[in-house]
Image (cartoon, rainbow, N blue to C red):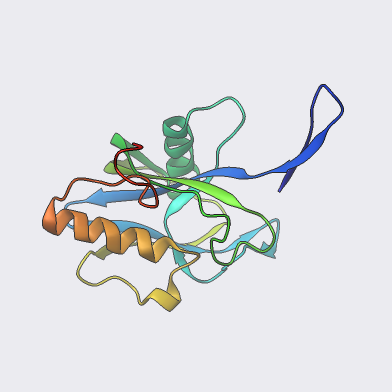
Amino acid sequence: MINCTFEDGGSISLRHVVVDGIITRGNKVLLNKRGTHNGKPLLESGKWSLIGGFVDRDETIAEAFKREAMEEAGCKIKNIRLFRVKDSPKRPNEKGRQNIAFVMVAVFISKIDNQTEEVLELKWFDFDNLPPLEKIAFDHGQDLYKYKEYLANKNALKILERFPAKIL
């Protein structure tokens, strides 16, 4: 949670904003095995996750996704689009913080050598051979399976699935 004090002296705890990115190449998705930061294990270390992270103060979600793709995977991406928004305050395994996640989709362009300690391994997975859910960090497995379902059915996307369509 982020502690914020307003002009009137009131204070509140606010939620973090993150991007989780589905980077595709054909029928494959790029996942990263979570590692460490400053020598300390990240939350869900050792599990596969989408490429992503926190949105910096002065950037858009698309800019954040491009930055995280370069920082974590050393890759350039194109055709960035919003897939869904996860706004539940009860997302799993966040250890006291609450993230609102913008799940983005993009197409892989090219790879350069640029990877951080936060990534133990990068691997392309076929959508028909994804890791088991218990080996995928946070709720990223839900995103992968929803995207796989979308690819198979080409259904209209419900970006905020909790709300009735008439509100959107």
